[in-house]
Amino acid sequence: MNCRECVEHLYEFLDRELTPELERQIRDHLEDCPPCGEQFDFEELFLKFLRARCRTQGAPAELKRRVLRELFGE
Ligand SMILES: [Zn+2]
Image (tube, rainbow, N blue to C red; front, top):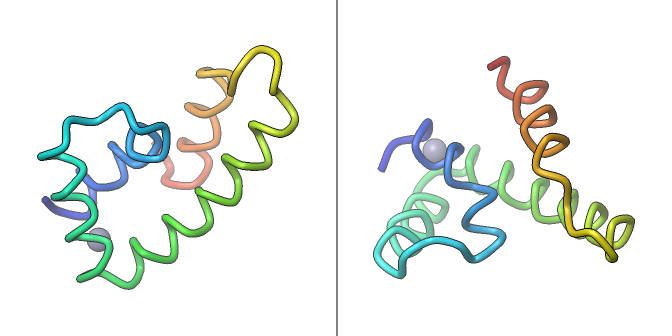
């Protein structure tokens, strides 16, 4: 697991859509990598905010993708 892979799976991780194995790898990486750990904290807060705003329809996938692009320049 490198930083890029970690970031790519971050939302799935937060949404608990990953396999247990992948989830464990991400958890390990977050513990070993302070920048990703901070990123994770931020995303978790952001996702909570999104969920609160979009409770009826779920967090919109397109918005999540746009935010990821903004944050990571992709
Ligand atoms: Zn990292």
